[in-house]
Length: 632
Image (tube, rainbow, N blue to C red; front, side, top):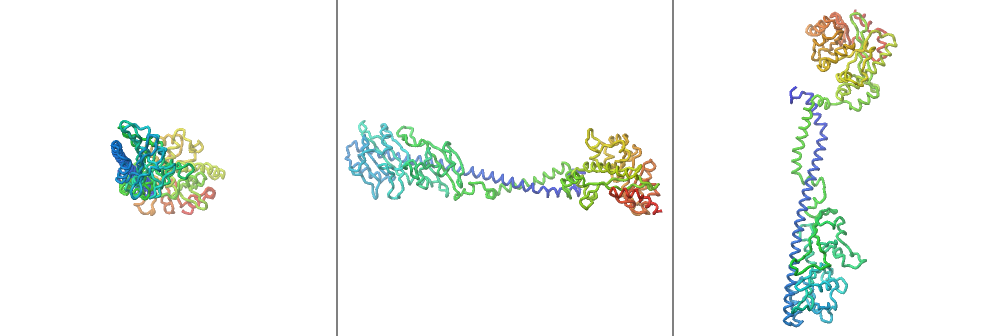
């Protein structure tokens, strides 16, 4: 057989294999598809995180620039104020100057000058249509509780940048009369030094709501938001204002101590940076040092957070919404290019691997993937339950009219049905259960022989049994546990029928000789159907040759049909071998073989295979003799 050419049986087995292994292909496609989808999902997730990190970096730069701009405004106003105060400008002119600065910079909410004791000496508030100076009678006699003690600590030419906080007046959170929302402010202060002498403190409050709202939506991505919170998790620009500045509200209030964890429970504030998914949102955040000028011109308040956290999150309304959580269907559709590449690899691999499996052991592969009528488990159960029984077909000596013996043939009794070997042997061999079947037949022979002998009609007759190559190899192994070990008594009546592929298999020839020398009886079954080796047969004595029914002529008068069997019979008869012909079904065939001096025949002309009790009755009644007498 060539390496690649396949005969019809192998082609059929290959076709069946492709069909039967089809679920493996489907599973492989599904597994690889999910894997590709997941890789696509991870790639998309990585792209999202990269985008979010870029947005965070841009937001930090924008925030730093914005704060730097506020500091520049503060320094400019403070410088002009000190110059005016040094020149002795009256208070009303300074107030007018402050009003002009506030009109010029609408982001300023309040300008104040404090004396050394915290008393306001000047204050200009933001009002509509224009800012106005607070009358002296309404000035506060103490600075804001949070900032005055810190401002006192400032040295010359130093600025203090306080935390973004709600504006608190008289211990109450101030509400913006325009928006009716709280007023988040950023407070910057500096000492006022005139002529080398500190005279008070300069404080500027900047409105931060507009900027914080702008920062939240500055990603310019629908469904994408940038949140700002401090190291304690207090939020500064969440869209629901009641969640912002939770530390500023009185204890007992609903807003008190609300932090980022109120909205994102999975955030880990112990980490400097992280990525996590919260419900339908994917979030990235990073911590950055709060504004600090290394030139020491200004520094942070002790009350201000050392770290500010910038968080970017996308929800399902964003263009990245479908990539937030893993969805096999969505990712499979989204990765269609990768899926096509995967299919172009998996499907050919399925056919190539199956064909390589076929080439590894073509015989076993063909046996395995030929259509099976019964499952292996069903046959094993039948053997275990002793559903296989022996039928016996007589072998008649047609020269002297005696019974030579019989051949034991396995039958499968399934309820009321008896199955012949052609209905199950293919599966028995394919599932490598031939040893189990042969052992079952041997058990039956030992039991049935005893019953035959008890009837007194079985004398000097043999029982032949066809054993498989696997059984013969198994029984000739050292320390084999098989029950097919013949006793001296059994060697007298049990004949092992071997097919030619066993007899002429070089590795088994010596084992056959060893058993033959140990008085084990052999017969060559179906002679002429294999690769016959006559020289090998001649090395045995008393070997029984069984000629296959394929060589029995249907028309005994046709010389062409008779040539082969006549040659076989003459050759082996002349060498002293007993020749038995199988498949004799007609009277003409019987008479023809008798004239050829054939010793024995086996076939339906004398009897079909019979169950034990019927076989005993057949022998007791000598039905085979009656058949011979009737043919004369």
